[in-house]
Amino acid sequence: MELSIIHERIHEIRGKKVILDKDLAELYGVETKYLKRSVKNNLHRFPDDFMFELTSEESNSLRCKISTLKTGRGNHIKYLPFAFTEHGIAMLSSILHSEKGNSS
Image (cartoon, rainbow, N blue to C red; front, side, top):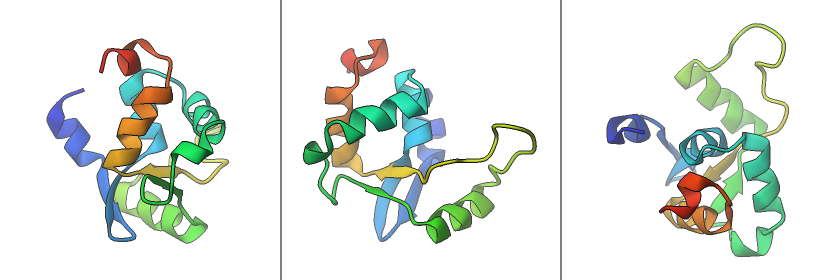
């Protein structure tokens, strides 16, 4: 993934620069549900300054800003996204078992 594409996926939420779970899943070459499951199984490694779950309001606001709402079955989010800070991204790479995650 090009640096400019990564830069476009950085958002400021709650005064922190973060990348959303779906974008990190794409970066690491895993499904978002696998990434979220891995995080939930290792929550003790993700304090609030590493990762947090967006509220419904934050998710809706962000979705409106970046125009991610698509039509059709399976294109709406079921679960609120996780947002990862720089430290959270580093921790995430240590728990994901993917080709891209292990080569970092």
